[in-house]
Image (cartoon, rainbow, N blue to C red; front, side, top):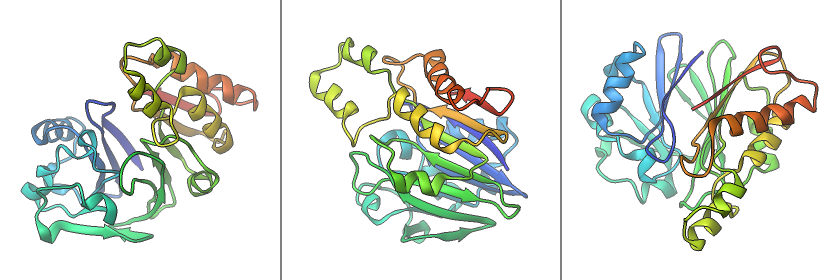
Length: 245
């Protein structure tokens, strides 16, 4: 399995998952032409995409959906999120109702906690057994989410903000409250605590994503997770790898 983070953050999110000649995208939150360019830069032909999975319908996750119409790519989203998704050709729409097989990928959707109709995360397993868990916008990580993400080789998790930076930001109080709520976004500490329950130290790759450009710093997000895992005797570069996007 190969993972490419093509875009991350409030400006847009796009993740490519490849295995055995098959490719799916999780979210398409930047302009279609930018997605095409970034796909080609990592050696993926846009007309080779097998499916697009949508976590939720906020614009930084669906802006590039014209890509689906251009290349006739099936799009999968929850019934609730289809309420807010516009412009996808009818024959390409698929409602997620549970576990499903897409190309050679076995996909388990799981409920996350965000201010959308029916947002989802995804655990994706390829035919050789490699597993990636994608958990983007969510205000908390519950036990069911942890159970679904267990035994992954790759973890793609948001590490959105540092609460102290957010508190001293010029964001309106209503926005601060939304971000900090259980249907907002994960703090560095929340992400680190969740990963400390998941990472076994057997060579997993951690991708910290969806960082706030105003209320976080890449090194701070990374250090928070490294410190949490070090309490379990796990060392970055030895027991696991970690990158920030």
